[in-house]
Image (cartoon, rainbow, N blue to C red):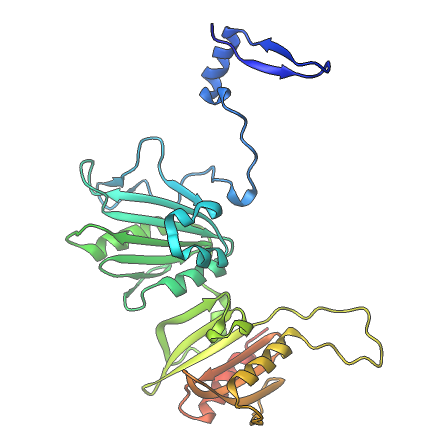
Length: 341
């Protein structure tokens, strides 16, 4: 005889109660066999799986289809098990605010083998989706024209939109790889809402920019751990490579214990600015102060990027390395600083 057993401790002693078979069968028909399994613990909002349709397309490129078992359209990974898929890159994705990965293989027909592996990484912010795309993309691949920033090559295509970074990889040869990958980009992008531009990048000078030369780092900007997060943008100035940067430091914390005799507090931007100066200048070397639309600026040389200048204004530390001359460096940095909020 089929029955369910529960414990009742309302009277202080365990009492076994038998659920009639008819009622149990009714529960199974309405809720499935999970009625016989222990109740699941609630998951955090961050790890909750989506209730809507997947971002990745059901069908793509002519008769292509998702090569997954029926009833399981895509596979999901969250923070606690991302390492099962990403292996050594897990920490990087988590640093960029990873929330959830949507994963699915595609094949050209019912009998075909998986040919394209599609991944959609949902991040916490559009800035982080752009950031992970900017450091993961293959800059040698062709920039794809369209409403989203995308790269497409013979084996891989990537793009970002809203808070999602997508990557498509060909694991089998096809006759028209770029066409197939571009189709996946356009089809998937249509399923993703949100922005396609990062406003801060518009503050950088637009002339002589290197295509696909911009990046956003959540830490270790320019290779210095104290710089934290920020942007770099590459330029080609009369055949010479230059790099502009913008570090964004934490806001100053106001204190209520200041007295008239106390010195004004040192802001995070000021501390970071001093640390960068110590890293760029030789011991006991006095900085060459440069005037401009900033609170303080000086000439400096990066060990790998060349000569230039560094300036501070408010929370921001900006500058350029590798400029062909001092005037160009001052003009470029001035243009960037004036556009900062």
